[in-house]
Image 1 (cartoon, rainbow, N blue to C red):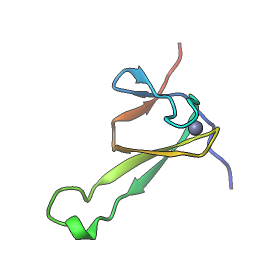
Image 2 (image 1 turned 120 degrees about the vertical axis):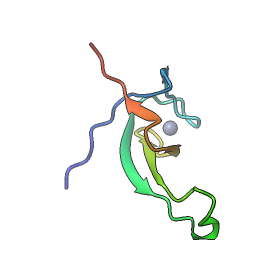
Image 3 (image 1 turned 90 degrees about the vertical axis):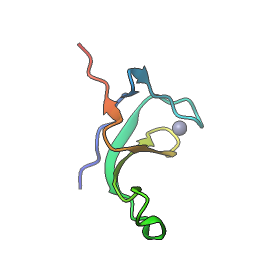
Length: 72
Ligand SMILES: [Zn+2]
């Protein structure tokens, strides 16, 4: 099982920094939020989760908002 490579992330053209440790590298994974208690509110959708590679804090975003920073 390979681990994803930590990468810098960008949210709306702003570099993402961890709210806990200010780390700037994250690993990204797709999660499906099942919010059965809010079935009719439109919140049942795929979300992106990026995990701080320093402290492990999970940042959740609506899918497509957070993108890996491509350098060069
Ligand atoms: Zn962190």
